Length: 345
Image (cartoon, one colour):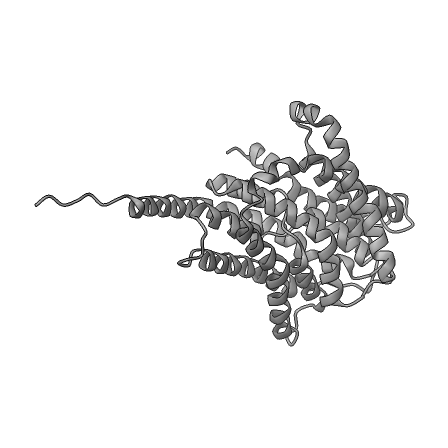
């Protein structure tokens, strides 16, 4: 793969670096009250656009085929939205006595509270040859659950750090997340054939809007002289994130491959990716709503911004290994199921 192809493939990660750099150089443009007016253009228009786009692109009609695999769905959703945030909370009790920046640690907790992403887990499951239908279902269903559960988890584990009242948070979530999502799904029903034919770049549109949200978040940070991020904390957080991902992937692999688990090797692949991946597309707008007006919002966002490329990088590196395991396991299971030939005397 040439350098140009590599840059095209990784344009979003490069975009994150670029918008943070621009925010550092010129924070006044995207700061609250600035020319961009993020309190309106981001808080309402950009967030609504992302979820309307999600509603348009979400193929809920494809979910029915995977609906009956209840055990797999329960495993993924409980691991993602119950075990993951609880385990992170327990881990952070130990890390709280270290000199690591406390806002970055809070950011790790927000990562644990996020739902699975709609895209990366499905793409990697498909690349391996795993249960793609189950991956699509859990990513989509997890996103719907996350609209309600993620804000509750954030408030449960981090407290009501927001300057916005609890009722206001949920009314804003309803208006900028739920309503656009439902409208997107309704519109999809009427223009489904056109969407299938033209295949609009939904992922690219959401990513561009997301870069705008990230830019304004960091504009607020760099315009605040009281916020300082030490390099030691950042390096440690990167190491912790990769360790958490790898550790949880191994944990889901162990539980889903036990005897009598009832999961096929293809199911295990979907479980590994869907249980450990977290959504940046849903996460950043939700943090923007729940922690509106909070001066440390950008520091809290940093672990999620690191987790997103890390999960894609780690997943991509492990695709050949997981694929090799799945194929050999499927062959072994096929051999054990073959009837034994009677021995001639």
